[in-house]
Image 1 (cartoon, rainbow, N blue to C red):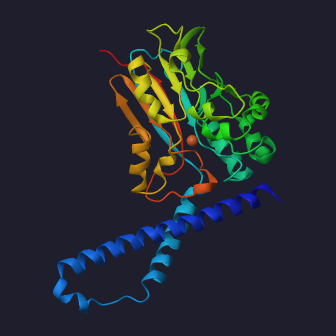
Image 2 (image 1 turned 120 degrees about the vertical axis):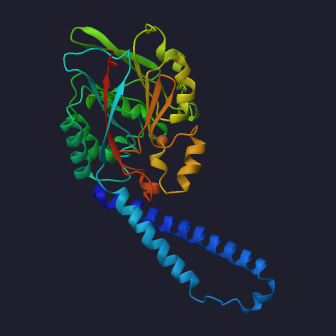
Length: 331
Ligand SMILES: [Fe+2]
């Protein structure tokens, strides 16, 4: 079976499941509304009109919403631009350091090779200095998504392509992926950092922490997220861009002086209303820009989506964030 065909099965199953979930949700609200109406109009309750076709209408409405969510989920990502100022960011000959931030491509369950190729081309067109990928790049064994992941090799950045594992990398035979990431030119940072040298001097550090799913991999001794270890040895005056798959880690790393944290995992919250729940489960962060003092956080809504919940409805589209870091202007 061609990869797109198996992804179609996964994503259509997801659309069906989401239709059921939205139907149940709408039915719950309608029943709650009827219950309240009956309670408030007790003397007229017997005369309340019945609605024979309500479940058919609810199911059709849910199917239409799930289809719209599916179309949004399968679209190419949007480019979202940010310019961040900080005294710690370096003066460079280019005038800024440009990061292209990708997350949650989930190759292996959702989009096929053509979408992968186009998205990587979009990233290159932004002319990044660094490409940073905040996890959930794949699902399943390497051979499953080979036709998509090969396009990671096309990524071009002046100072490298770095990534962290997300929870889905730890579900997906991580030891089989280690040589693949090396071959694709992606350096995985697991509780470690690298200096980025621009114009002959260290301009900033890129750090990455593991995902807590690492601790649940059977028969392996993977380390969970350890920001102290990831940042150890970095001079305190230097700017750090830290990758964490889950945004909640921002609450831990912001007080440690990290200038910018990049995260993903939330997929923008998937559906309006559900995004509030996903935010609450992720430290209060679901999509976009946040700040605590001088420490900033950008949460990607995911460049693509996991095929098992393939829906974006009333929430941000898939994105590639382009972030320019500039030293703060002084008069
Ligand atoms: Fe995730």
